[in-house]
Amino acid sequence: MKEPGRTHGLWSALKSRSVPSAIASVFGTESAQQIAFLRSLNKGLRKPETLHVNLTELKTAVFDLETTGFYPKQGDEILSFGAVKVEGDAVNTDEIIHTLSKPTRAVPPEIVSLTGITQEMAEQAPSLVEALHGFMTFVEDRVLIAHGSGHDKAFLDLALWKTSKVHLSHRVLDTMMIAQKLDPSSRIAGLDEWLEVYGIPVTRRHHALEDAKMTAFLWTALIEQLGEKGVQTLGDLYVFLSHS
Image 1 (spheres, rainbow, N blue to C red):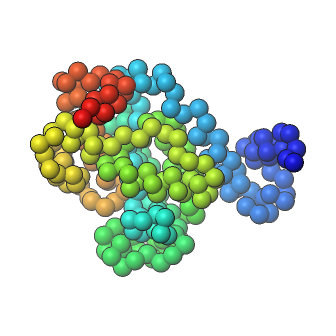
Image 2 (spheres, helix red, strand yellow):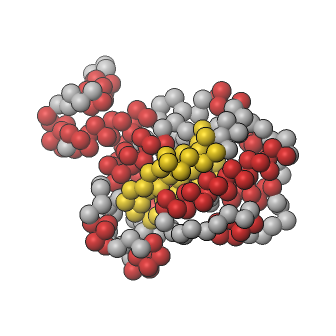
C-alpha cells in the first residue's frame, strides 16, 4: 500500500527544487523539476468562467509543431515548437517562442527538405522534456489555437504523457474548423488557401514559429467574422461550432 501523502510530497519536493538524490539520479535534477512543473501546470485548466470571456479579450497562444512524420503512435516525434501570444484580437509578435526538440530517431530526408531542420540541428537541440517545459511555460493556461489542430494536439498530448504522465488539459481551437464553419460552401482546408482567402501574406511555411504567426493573424480575422454573426464569447463559439 502507498504511504499517505508520499506522492504529493515527492512532487512538492521536485517543484521546490528539494529533490531527493535517488530521484535526481534517475531523471537528473533539472529534468525531474521540469517533469514536476509539467504535471502541476495542467491542474485547474478549462475554467468554466473562461466561456464567458469575449473573443476580443480572450488570451490565447497560437502554436504550430514540426514533426518527423504524421503518426505519433507509430514513433514520429516533435522536431520543433513555435508559438505566439494573442491578446484578444491583437497578435503580440514580441511574445514568441521557437525551439527545436531532439528526436530519438533520424530525421527523414523528406522532412529535412520540407522544414530545413537537419540531422545535425536535431542532434544539438534540447531534449523533449526541456523543449516541452519551455513551450508549456510560455503558453501558460491560455486557450491554444492551431490550424488542423488534431495533428498538433495528438503530438503534444503524447509528448506530455511520455515525459510526465499527464494529458493535455488546455482548451484547443482549430482555425481550419472555424473557417470552414464560417464558409460551409468552401472545400479548402490547407493553411495556404485560407491565408489567401483572408489576404494574409505568406512568410515562410513549415517553420513552426512562422506558421504560428500566420495562423494567429488568421485567428484574428476569424474573430471579426464571428462577431458579425453574433458569436461574441468562447461559449458562443462552442455553440456555433456544434450546430450542424
